[in-house]
Length: 565
Ligand SMILES: Nc1ncnc2c1ncn2[C@@H]1O[C@H](COP(=O)(O)OP(=O)(O)OP(=O)(O)O)[C@@H](O)[C@H]1O
Image 1 (cartoon, helix red, strand yellow):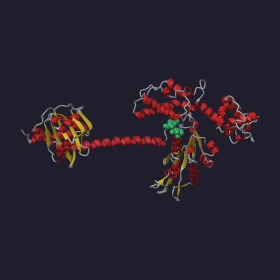
Image 2 (cartoon, rainbow, N blue to C red):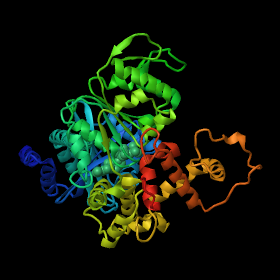
Image 3 (tube, rainbow, N blue to C red):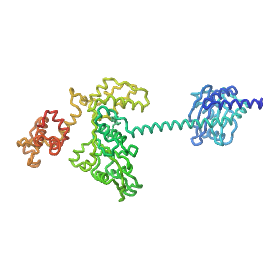
Image 4 (spheres, rainbow, N blue to C red):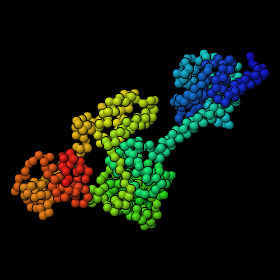
């Protein structure tokens, strides 16, 4: 029995009204399904595409009673299946009626792939190709309720729907692409926000606490162009301070280029900093600007400046003095206008004394020194730092809420000596949360197990003091033979002017006097103090005589109860 023209018109009008009934395509398709369910024996409608390149069936979405799903599943096809589908694509634009999905290989794969959403069973399939402007949108598939359920009349009715469905699908696919685009934009925006955060400088924790005096100095640089030198142990936050300086600098929106001088092999330092011309050396197949040129108009952050080899220091100084660079392999000078912020964890003064750091470069950089204290000297910042790192790590791992942190853990962390400083604390929190995302975080269990590492003055010697001891002992070891000789000879100082040098006395001639090491250290310090007339730091001071950092010497003297007089 064929339907009258009037019936067909009514059917088509209602189907189109439903298809276009809502701005939300998913809702429209669910309403359309409710209507079609009255005219076709169907459980679901799906759309899929065939990819000739990948030889796969790509499932796109599924509509059922009261439900819409974007499916996004790819089903690989055999060569024969692919060929059979390709035939459909190429020629047939009508409806294909498959009485039993199990007997037709592609329909069977399709049913199987969707079995988590629509119960798998033997059923009829009615499939047609939807096209828009000669482009294949996909295969629309009516998934029947049972075997051989679609008749010739169903095929005819289905054919009436092809054009309105093609239009609707075209809109839906466009809508899906828009959603994907939106989510990609959202991801990119999040990424950019993160980058912006690091460009602007992350929030400096402790700016009103343990870093207050450091940040007071930083704020003096606001809107100023002065070079800055950031000094502090490794991992204390020197780079963060450099970011903070950049964020309040008149060059805040100009290039901010960071170079870790310690990470560049010595042979590449010059080309990295100053650039090179094509053919300047083997492998220079193109010309490349150096970091100075890249930072032109902005700021260059030279991290670990103390690691810069002497030769590169000479070139760096010349660039800073003349405000121009020459690429390797070129005689042309390029004017540059770069503000330099440098940082180091090395004692540049000591390096200078040993000839490892150029004095002229030192004074060029040492215009505005900024000291960043180690974490063990600002333990009041530890709780806020832990909280901030916990938040950061949980955000990164997509965890809801923060894990519990026992107060005894915080107490323990306050007593620890933090040789690796803030970075060590950050890594500890990261490790803790990775191992136990739900908490509680017993971070103290992840610290080095040697109890001597904890700062607990009443219980044990601090890590810092141990480091000082090791340094003092190493230095004194060098001087012990002289010292023994000096004491044997009754000299007031083992470096007494005119004292015999090492070669004048052989150890076989005078056997060394063995004393407790502490006594020897005490004597060496006292001897140096006598010779330096009580002066500790500066030229001719006891620290220089002992080749020690003045602070290290002061700390040792305090510990041993030695006074300078
Ligand atoms: N005050 C702080 N507030 C928030 N995070 C901090 C702070 N200090 C350091 N950090 C974090 O600790 C880590 C180490 O800091 P940073 O890299 O700035 O140290 P550094 O002194 O430059 O290290 P290095 O000596 O190895 O170059 C970074 O992840 C940084 O964000």
